[in-house]
Length: 424
Image (cartoon, rainbow, N blue to C red):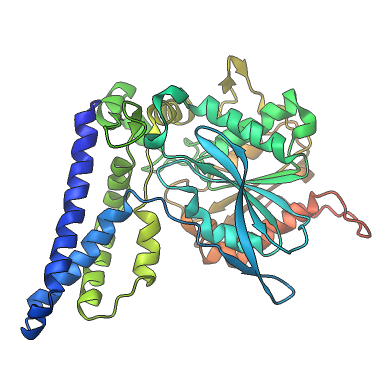
């Protein structure tokens, strides 16, 4: 599998399907055919419309789509995206709401690098922009990074987070969503020992596999069902000639997408069949519920081979974070060194990706942290996406996280500090 030919073959298949969809849509749109009231032409055009959009989105980076924001003064303020730190494999960006007073809560969202872009957290960002200064890690697509930029594995990822936290300062509140939770915990422990003054004020870990063996799922147990050699042979490919990263070894986003889709194949198949029917009836629109979801879901990015393989081997197979033996540049990181950063974990009771028990394991690793700086929450009835982007996040989890952040923030002038932490 580790050849450009395989990568280019996948891209050829995707491109061909996009072309077939565009062709079917164009044929169905011929004015001459309008004189022939044949429903088959409408279905063909609708199939083409949905197919073209589907395969086109697989190689498009979604836009944040956050252009204005209505503040407390009742006026719309422009939102600009500013790069605070630029690096080869990812940037630290800030959502600047122009004309608005700087908000006291400064939040760093650590986005997953597991096949989707950081825009997967768009609704999370929008919900926090209301009364927070929001920063987020914007990871780059590995296929667009030249080989000359070097490698990027779990240790490099951790050091990126260390640099981002240093840049933002000690009044930062970090929220790590899903995949980066173990490495964010490690980055915090690294700062606790190497640069204590740069530690964040609090750390919230949402649905992350701190200890994948605590409650295994099909996703977290995958690494145990195959050897590293099998994984490298089956999943790793070399970027083809079409992209700037030609020759780079990657885990292709299209393979990851195929895995995502296969987990709920029947559900996705019905969703696309229903969308074709709606398009044929003229009921579909550019930004309807289906397109809003799948425009984001289908937009996938490649991961560097070394990051993907080291994640499987060191986080899932060896459990280095869970066993507190994770090393960076040959130096072992001791999570017990975290003594001042308040830590909260959030889990979904129905999470089938990182099941309850995997994330809360972080609190047991923080042996140097007093109990009044530890907190946990399990959201009843919530699945994986619901705990950071769905109704559960908006109605229940977000208020709890902000309360936790306020309880562990430096007191504002004229206000008395209060610690309302409560482990549940």
